[in-house]
Image (cartoon, rainbow, N blue to C red; front, side, top):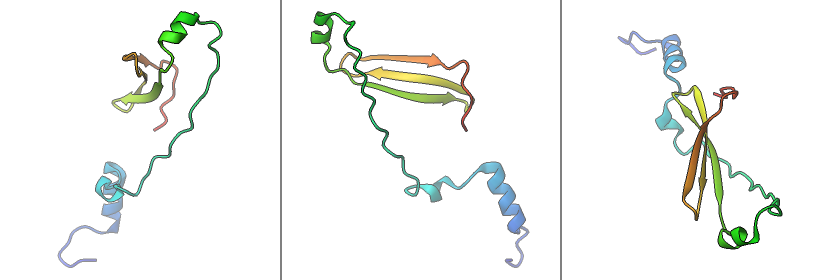
Length: 95
C-alpha cells in the first residue's frame, strides 16, 4: 500500500468492475481471427444473363449493436454497391 493514498486493492478492483478493463493496455494484445469464407453454389435458379452481368459480387455480413442492446445485421454487396441493415428481432445479446 502506498503511504498517503486512500485507495487500496479492493477499490481498484471495484473501479475495474464498474468501468471495465483499461483499453489502452489491451491494444495489440487482442487479435481478431479471420473467419472462413462460405461457398454456396445455388446459382441454378438465376437467369444466365443476370449471372453474366453480376459474376463477381462479394457479400460481406456483420452484426452491429446499437447502444450495446439492439442487434442489426449489416450486409454490403461489393461491385454493385448495395447495402442493407435489418434489426434482428429474436436475437439474444451476446455481450
